[in-house]
Image (cartoon, rainbow, N blue to C red; front, side, top):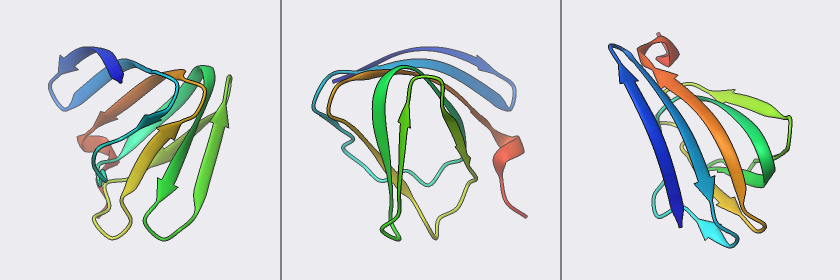
Length: 91
């Protein structure tokens, strides 16, 4: 299960998301994000086969890129702070 709180501004979205233990996203996402893990651990699976494993205090970013979407999972559960918007689009 994923639960979230969202604030939407023009060209910018800010979310606080909690993934329950055993969470597996139901879709591949091709949108850009800046992700900060404030609790727990999660894995971002890239369509090209690479993985990013983030635990408390770690962050990473992706750009809008239909060539390499990502999918999130969490074995233990986690809390993420995510920022996304038009500024993450690639040229």
